[in-house]
Length: 361
Image 1 (cartoon, rainbow, N blue to C red):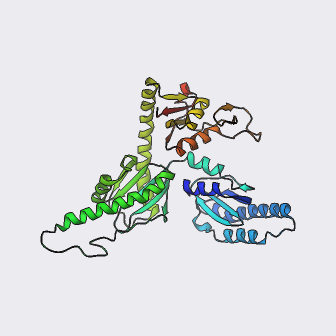
Image 2 (image 1 turned 180 degrees about the vertical axis):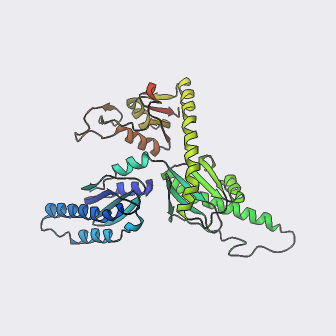
Image 3 (image 1 turned 90 degrees about the horizontal axis):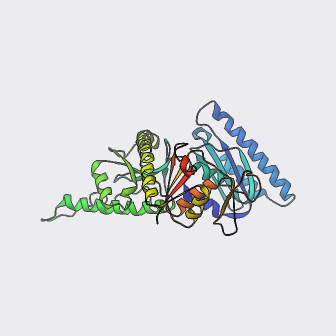
Protein backbone atom coordinates (compact mmCIF):
# COMPACT_ATOMS: atom_id res chain seq x y z
CA UNK A 1 0.00 0.00 0.00
CA UNK A 2 1.21 3.49 -0.83
CA UNK A 3 -0.22 6.95 -0.26
CA UNK A 4 -2.09 6.78 -3.58
CA UNK A 5 -3.96 3.70 -2.32
CA UNK A 6 -4.89 5.50 0.90
CA UNK A 7 -6.16 8.51 -1.04
CA UNK A 8 -8.27 6.20 -3.20
CA UNK A 9 -9.78 4.59 -0.10
CA UNK A 10 -10.53 8.00 1.40
CA UNK A 11 -12.44 9.04 -1.72
CA UNK A 12 -14.83 6.07 -1.57
CA UNK A 13 -18.06 6.92 0.22
CA UNK A 14 -21.28 5.06 0.89
CA UNK A 15 -22.73 3.06 3.75
CA UNK A 16 -21.83 0.42 4.74
CA UNK A 17 -18.08 0.74 4.28
CA UNK A 18 -16.46 -2.05 6.32
CA UNK A 19 -12.88 -1.82 7.54
CA UNK A 20 -11.15 -4.71 9.34
CA UNK A 21 -7.57 -4.41 10.59
CA UNK A 22 -5.37 -6.67 12.69
CA UNK A 23 -1.71 -7.45 13.41
CA UNK A 24 -0.32 -10.52 11.63
CA UNK A 25 2.85 -12.59 11.80
CA UNK A 26 5.31 -13.73 9.15
CA UNK A 27 6.60 -16.83 10.94
CA UNK A 28 5.28 -19.92 12.73
CA UNK A 29 3.88 -20.68 15.18
CA UNK A 30 2.43 -17.17 15.68
CA UNK A 31 0.97 -16.98 12.18
CA UNK A 32 -1.20 -20.04 12.77
CA UNK A 33 -3.49 -17.91 14.93
CA UNK A 34 -3.89 -15.15 12.31
CA UNK A 35 -6.72 -16.85 10.32
CA UNK A 36 -8.58 -17.51 13.59
CA UNK A 37 -8.25 -13.90 14.73
CA UNK A 38 -9.42 -12.64 11.35
CA UNK A 39 -12.35 -15.07 11.44
CA UNK A 40 -13.43 -13.64 14.79
CA UNK A 41 -13.28 -10.09 13.42
CA UNK A 42 -15.24 -11.09 10.32
CA UNK A 43 -17.86 -12.68 12.57
CA UNK A 44 -18.07 -9.45 14.57
CA UNK A 45 -18.53 -7.41 11.38
CA UNK A 46 -21.14 -9.83 10.03
CA UNK A 47 -23.19 -9.78 13.24
CA UNK A 48 -23.09 -6.00 13.34
CA UNK A 49 -24.24 -5.70 9.73
CA UNK A 50 -27.09 -8.13 10.30
CA UNK A 51 -28.22 -6.22 13.39
CA UNK A 52 -28.19 -2.91 11.55
CA UNK A 53 -29.73 -4.08 8.29
CA UNK A 54 -32.24 -6.54 9.74
CA UNK A 55 -34.14 -8.30 6.96
CA UNK A 56 -32.68 -6.19 4.18
CA UNK A 57 -30.60 -8.23 1.78
CA UNK A 58 -26.84 -7.92 2.37
CA UNK A 59 -26.01 -11.36 0.97
CA UNK A 60 -23.81 -10.00 -1.81
CA UNK A 61 -21.78 -7.88 0.63
CA UNK A 62 -21.23 -10.79 3.00
CA UNK A 63 -20.37 -13.10 0.09
CA UNK A 64 -17.82 -10.55 -1.11
CA UNK A 65 -16.32 -10.34 2.38
CA UNK A 66 -16.03 -14.12 2.53
CA UNK A 67 -14.36 -14.23 -0.90
CA UNK A 68 -11.94 -11.50 0.15
CA UNK A 69 -10.96 -13.48 3.25
CA UNK A 70 -10.49 -16.64 1.19
CA UNK A 71 -8.08 -14.79 -1.13
CA UNK A 72 -5.62 -14.04 1.70
CA UNK A 73 -2.46 -16.14 1.76
CA UNK A 74 -1.40 -16.30 5.40
CA UNK A 75 1.76 -18.17 4.45
CA UNK A 76 3.19 -14.88 3.19
CA UNK A 77 1.87 -12.48 5.81
CA UNK A 78 3.74 -9.41 6.95
CA UNK A 79 3.10 -7.36 10.11
CA UNK A 80 -0.42 -6.13 9.50
CA UNK A 81 -3.55 -6.87 7.48
CA UNK A 82 -6.31 -4.47 6.37
CA UNK A 83 -9.55 -5.37 4.59
CA UNK A 84 -11.86 -2.83 2.95
CA UNK A 85 -15.21 -3.74 1.47
CA UNK A 86 -18.47 -2.07 0.50
CA UNK A 87 -21.16 -3.09 -2.03
CA UNK A 88 -18.94 -1.96 -4.93
CA UNK A 89 -15.37 -2.39 -3.69
CA UNK A 90 -13.28 -5.07 -2.02
CA UNK A 91 -9.55 -5.10 -1.35
CA UNK A 92 -7.10 -6.53 1.16
CA UNK A 93 -3.60 -5.24 1.95
CA UNK A 94 -0.77 -7.06 3.68
CA UNK A 95 1.26 -4.33 5.38
CA UNK A 96 4.81 -4.11 6.76
CA UNK A 97 3.68 -2.39 9.95
CA UNK A 98 1.50 -3.47 12.87
CA UNK A 99 -2.15 -2.45 13.13
CA UNK A 100 -4.62 -2.69 15.99
CA UNK A 101 -7.47 -5.18 15.92
CA UNK A 102 -10.44 -3.15 14.75
CA UNK A 103 -13.81 -3.46 13.01
CA UNK A 104 -15.33 -0.21 11.74
CA UNK A 105 -18.58 0.20 9.78
CA UNK A 106 -19.28 3.69 8.51
CA UNK A 107 -19.93 5.98 5.57
CA UNK A 108 -16.23 5.86 4.67
CA UNK A 109 -13.37 3.44 5.19
CA UNK A 110 -11.35 3.88 8.37
CA UNK A 111 -7.84 4.94 7.32
CA UNK A 112 -6.52 6.86 10.34
CA UNK A 113 -4.40 3.97 11.61
CA UNK A 114 -2.92 3.50 8.13
CA UNK A 115 -2.07 7.18 7.77
CA UNK A 116 -0.54 7.24 11.24
CA UNK A 117 1.63 4.17 10.56
CA UNK A 118 2.73 5.41 7.12
CA UNK A 119 3.64 8.86 8.43
CA UNK A 120 5.80 7.54 11.25
CA UNK A 121 7.52 4.64 9.50
CA UNK A 122 10.59 5.15 7.28
CA UNK A 123 9.35 4.86 3.69
CA UNK A 124 11.15 5.30 0.38
CA UNK A 125 11.05 4.34 -3.28
CA UNK A 126 13.60 1.93 -4.71
CA UNK A 127 14.23 2.08 -8.44
CA UNK A 128 16.13 -0.88 -9.90
CA UNK A 129 17.42 0.45 -13.23
CA UNK A 130 17.74 -2.02 -16.07
CA UNK A 131 16.82 -2.56 -19.68
CA UNK A 132 15.03 -5.83 -18.89
CA UNK A 133 13.15 -4.29 -17.08
CA UNK A 134 13.38 -1.29 -14.73
CA UNK A 135 11.39 -2.08 -11.57
CA UNK A 136 9.93 0.20 -8.93
CA UNK A 137 9.50 -0.85 -5.29
CA UNK A 138 7.93 0.83 -2.31
CA UNK A 139 10.17 0.47 0.71
CA UNK A 140 9.01 0.37 4.32
CA UNK A 141 12.05 -0.17 6.54
CA UNK A 142 13.59 -3.47 5.41
CA UNK A 143 10.60 -4.54 3.31
CA UNK A 144 10.21 -3.90 -0.43
CA UNK A 145 7.00 -4.37 -2.41
CA UNK A 146 7.18 -4.23 -6.19
CA UNK A 147 4.87 -1.78 -7.95
CA UNK A 148 3.16 -3.29 -10.97
CA UNK A 149 1.13 -0.35 -12.17
CA UNK A 150 1.33 2.90 -14.15
CA UNK A 151 3.90 1.51 -16.61
CA UNK A 152 6.09 -0.42 -14.18
CA UNK A 153 7.97 -2.64 -14.72
CA UNK A 154 9.27 -0.80 -17.80
CA UNK A 155 11.25 -2.61 -20.50
CA UNK A 156 13.63 -1.11 -23.05
CA UNK A 157 12.45 -2.04 -26.54
CA UNK A 158 14.63 0.24 -28.64
CA UNK A 159 17.60 -0.43 -30.95
CA UNK A 160 19.67 -3.33 -29.74
CA UNK A 161 16.69 -4.95 -28.04
CA UNK A 162 13.47 -5.55 -29.96
CA UNK A 163 14.68 -3.82 -33.11
CA UNK A 164 18.11 -3.94 -34.77
CA UNK A 165 20.69 -1.21 -34.53
CA UNK A 166 20.90 1.11 -37.55
CA UNK A 167 23.57 0.17 -40.09
CA UNK A 168 25.61 2.07 -42.63
CA UNK A 169 28.83 4.00 -42.63
CA UNK A 170 29.19 6.99 -40.38
CA UNK A 171 26.82 5.61 -37.74
CA UNK A 172 28.36 5.57 -34.29
CA UNK A 173 26.39 2.67 -32.88
CA UNK A 174 27.67 3.12 -29.35
CA UNK A 175 26.69 6.79 -29.21
CA UNK A 176 23.35 6.04 -30.85
CA UNK A 177 22.50 3.34 -28.33
CA UNK A 178 23.57 5.57 -25.45
CA UNK A 179 21.15 8.23 -26.63
CA UNK A 180 18.37 5.64 -26.90
CA UNK A 181 19.10 4.58 -23.32
CA UNK A 182 18.94 8.19 -22.17
CA UNK A 183 15.55 8.42 -23.84
CA UNK A 184 14.44 5.21 -22.13
CA UNK A 185 15.44 6.49 -18.69
CA UNK A 186 13.67 9.78 -19.42
CA UNK A 187 10.52 7.72 -19.95
CA UNK A 188 11.21 5.88 -16.66
CA UNK A 189 11.54 9.25 -14.93
CA UNK A 190 8.21 10.31 -16.42
CA UNK A 191 6.56 7.17 -15.05
CA UNK A 192 8.12 7.84 -11.66
CA UNK A 193 6.50 11.30 -11.61
CA UNK A 194 3.06 9.72 -11.11
CA UNK A 195 4.24 8.23 -7.82
CA UNK A 196 6.37 11.15 -6.66
CA UNK A 197 3.51 13.63 -7.06
CA UNK A 198 1.27 11.53 -4.82
CA UNK A 199 4.00 10.37 -2.45
CA UNK A 200 7.23 12.43 -2.63
CA UNK A 201 9.50 9.98 -0.82
CA UNK A 202 13.29 9.77 -0.97
CA UNK A 203 14.62 7.39 -3.62
CA UNK A 204 17.18 4.61 -3.52
CA UNK A 205 18.53 3.77 -6.97
CA UNK A 206 20.13 0.45 -7.89
CA UNK A 207 21.85 -0.49 -11.13
CA UNK A 208 25.11 -0.78 -13.02
CA UNK A 209 27.26 2.35 -13.15
CA UNK A 210 26.28 3.11 -16.75
CA UNK A 211 22.55 3.11 -16.00
CA UNK A 212 23.01 5.09 -12.79
CA UNK A 213 24.90 7.71 -14.78
CA UNK A 214 22.21 7.95 -17.47
CA UNK A 215 19.44 8.29 -14.89
CA UNK A 216 21.33 10.97 -12.96
CA UNK A 217 21.82 12.85 -16.22
CA UNK A 218 18.16 12.91 -17.32
CA UNK A 219 16.08 12.62 -14.14
CA UNK A 220 14.04 15.46 -12.66
CA UNK A 221 14.31 13.62 -9.33
CA UNK A 222 18.09 13.39 -9.00
CA UNK A 223 17.93 15.61 -5.90
CA UNK A 224 15.50 13.18 -4.27
CA UNK A 225 17.98 10.29 -4.61
CA UNK A 226 19.00 9.37 -1.09
CA UNK A 227 21.44 6.59 -1.88
CA UNK A 228 22.76 4.40 -4.71
CA UNK A 229 23.45 0.68 -4.87
CA UNK A 230 25.82 -0.20 -7.69
CA UNK A 231 25.57 -3.57 -9.43
CA UNK A 232 23.39 -5.68 -11.70
CA UNK A 233 20.10 -6.43 -9.95
CA UNK A 234 18.04 -7.55 -12.92
CA UNK A 235 17.08 -10.76 -11.15
CA UNK A 236 17.45 -9.78 -7.50
CA UNK A 237 14.29 -10.57 -5.55
CA UNK A 238 12.46 -7.91 -3.57
CA UNK A 239 13.54 -9.61 -0.33
CA UNK A 240 17.22 -9.77 -1.30
CA UNK A 241 17.21 -6.25 -2.71
CA UNK A 242 15.73 -4.96 0.55
CA UNK A 243 18.55 -6.52 2.60
CA UNK A 244 21.04 -4.60 0.46
CA UNK A 245 19.20 -1.28 0.18
CA UNK A 246 17.79 -0.77 3.69
CA UNK A 247 21.16 -0.45 5.51
CA UNK A 248 22.18 2.25 3.01
CA UNK A 249 18.85 4.07 3.39
CA UNK A 250 18.99 3.81 7.18
CA UNK A 251 22.48 5.32 7.26
CA UNK A 252 21.49 8.19 4.97
CA UNK A 253 18.32 8.92 6.96
CA UNK A 254 20.47 9.25 10.09
CA UNK A 255 22.69 11.72 8.24
CA UNK A 256 19.63 13.66 7.08
CA UNK A 257 18.49 14.00 10.68
CA UNK A 258 21.75 15.72 11.56
CA UNK A 259 21.50 18.05 8.57
CA UNK A 260 17.98 19.27 9.34
CA UNK A 261 19.01 20.64 12.73
CA UNK A 262 21.53 22.82 10.91
CA UNK A 263 18.81 23.91 8.48
CA UNK A 264 16.55 24.80 11.40
CA UNK A 265 19.27 26.92 13.03
CA UNK A 266 19.73 28.79 9.76
CA UNK A 267 15.96 29.29 9.40
CA UNK A 268 15.79 30.64 12.97
CA UNK A 269 18.49 33.18 12.12
CA UNK A 270 16.55 34.20 9.00
CA UNK A 271 13.23 34.21 10.91
CA UNK A 272 11.78 31.70 8.46
CA UNK A 273 10.48 29.17 10.94
CA UNK A 274 7.59 28.40 13.28
CA UNK A 275 7.50 26.63 16.64
CA UNK A 276 4.72 24.95 18.65
CA UNK A 277 1.86 22.93 17.22
CA UNK A 278 -0.56 25.90 17.21
CA UNK A 279 1.65 28.14 15.07
CA UNK A 280 2.86 25.26 12.90
CA UNK A 281 -0.75 24.23 12.27
CA UNK A 282 -1.70 27.63 10.86
CA UNK A 283 1.34 28.07 8.62
CA UNK A 284 1.24 24.47 7.37
CA UNK A 285 -2.38 24.95 6.29
CA UNK A 286 -1.40 28.18 4.55
CA UNK A 287 1.00 26.10 2.45
CA UNK A 288 4.14 27.80 3.76
CA UNK A 289 5.83 24.69 5.14
CA UNK A 290 8.96 23.50 3.34
CA UNK A 291 10.35 21.14 5.99
CA UNK A 292 8.60 19.87 9.11
CA UNK A 293 10.64 18.56 12.03
CA UNK A 294 8.76 16.43 14.56
CA UNK A 295 10.02 14.65 17.65
CA UNK A 296 9.39 10.92 17.60
CA UNK A 297 6.33 9.91 19.63
CA UNK A 298 4.94 13.47 19.77
CA UNK A 299 1.14 13.40 19.74
CA UNK A 300 -1.42 15.95 20.87
CA UNK A 301 -5.23 16.06 20.58
CA UNK A 302 -6.80 19.28 19.37
CA UNK A 303 -9.93 21.10 18.27
CA UNK A 304 -10.13 23.30 15.16
CA UNK A 305 -12.40 26.34 14.65
CA UNK A 306 -14.80 26.77 11.74
CA UNK A 307 -12.13 28.33 9.52
CA UNK A 308 -9.88 25.28 9.91
CA UNK A 309 -6.94 27.58 10.61
CA UNK A 310 -7.01 27.96 14.40
CA UNK A 311 -6.07 24.98 16.55
CA UNK A 312 -6.72 24.67 20.27
CA UNK A 313 -4.84 21.99 22.20
CA UNK A 314 -7.06 19.95 24.55
CA UNK A 315 -6.44 17.32 27.19
CA UNK A 316 -9.35 14.99 26.44
CA UNK A 317 -9.19 13.29 23.02
CA UNK A 318 -12.57 11.53 23.32
CA UNK A 319 -15.18 14.21 22.34
CA UNK A 320 -16.45 13.79 18.76
CA UNK A 321 -15.25 17.24 17.69
CA UNK A 322 -11.67 16.60 18.83
CA UNK A 323 -9.05 15.15 16.50
CA UNK A 324 -7.09 12.37 18.12
CA UNK A 325 -3.71 13.62 16.89
CA UNK A 326 -3.24 17.14 15.50
CA UNK A 327 0.41 16.34 14.78
CA UNK A 328 -0.60 13.64 12.34
CA UNK A 329 -2.90 16.08 10.56
CA UNK A 330 -0.06 18.61 10.22
CA UNK A 331 2.18 15.91 8.77
CA UNK A 332 -0.46 15.07 6.17
CA UNK A 333 -0.96 18.74 5.32
CA UNK A 334 2.75 19.41 4.80
CA UNK A 335 3.11 16.34 2.59
CA UNK A 336 -0.03 17.24 0.63
CA UNK A 337 1.46 20.63 -0.15
CA UNK A 338 4.73 19.06 -1.38
CA UNK A 339 6.72 19.72 1.78
CA UNK A 340 9.02 17.26 3.56
CA UNK A 341 8.80 15.68 7.01
CA UNK A 342 11.70 14.49 9.15
CA UNK A 343 11.37 12.79 12.54
CA UNK A 344 14.04 13.65 15.09
CA UNK A 345 15.04 12.29 18.49
CA UNK A 346 12.83 12.90 21.49
CA UNK A 347 13.96 16.01 23.36
CA UNK A 348 15.91 17.50 20.45
CA UNK A 349 13.24 20.15 19.76
CA UNK A 350 12.53 21.08 23.38
CA UNK A 351 13.01 24.82 22.74
CA UNK A 352 10.45 24.60 19.91
CA UNK A 353 7.79 22.70 21.91
CA UNK A 354 8.64 19.43 20.13
CA UNK A 355 7.74 20.55 16.61
CA UNK A 356 9.18 23.10 14.17
CA UNK A 357 8.42 24.16 10.62
CA UNK A 358 10.97 25.64 8.21
CA UNK A 359 9.09 28.05 5.97
CA UNK A 360 9.23 28.60 2.24
CA UNK A 361 8.78 32.34 2.77
